[in-house]
Length: 240
Picture 1 (tube, rainbow, N blue to C red):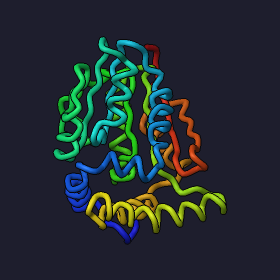
Picture 2: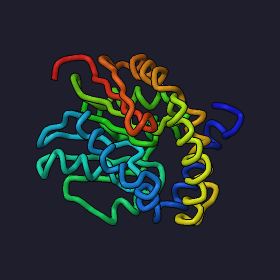
Picture 3: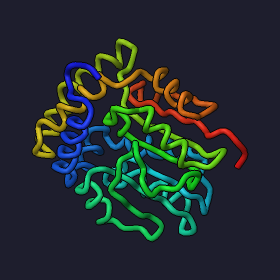
Picture 4: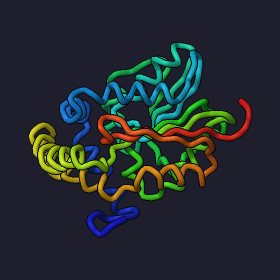
């Protein structure tokens, strides 16, 4: 972590409290902030899981359940999706849109107590990895929870390398998004945190290396939306 944000337990507490405060307007803000593109990015994350009808998925840092619901649609009524988040208020919002094949639990993505090893065909995390200081623990747990041949997928905001998209990013995420977030969520600090957390997050190649060092193989990543979003995926070694 850099000097701009706290680390360890203090950061976890502050981030959890922040998400509790903005839970009610979280999905609306995501739609506004991304001009609705978040739905397309979710679909690409679901595609990367290679889930089939009747499959089982684990969605970490699930928030209000946007990606969780898309995973549930992919596996169908015979499937099962477990959404885990450390914010009770985010989960309260998620549970307000219940689905018969979805379960939500409060939990720590780096220490998934009660979540079975090799119990899922895929594990996902969307826009949550940068909020977790211990990425080794995160991906170690994700790898543990998927079966041999299972997929681990990470969707995250990234700083684009090019001048054109870099300039747009600086204007949009550093200046406009905090103002929009303050107006929509009523919490100026929450969306001022967003660009700071992205700045301090690891670069895509380093994230891929962390995934590999925690038991995943065939790790690949690609940039979406002019390099503002990255999609990483890998698989646990072994035959299904």
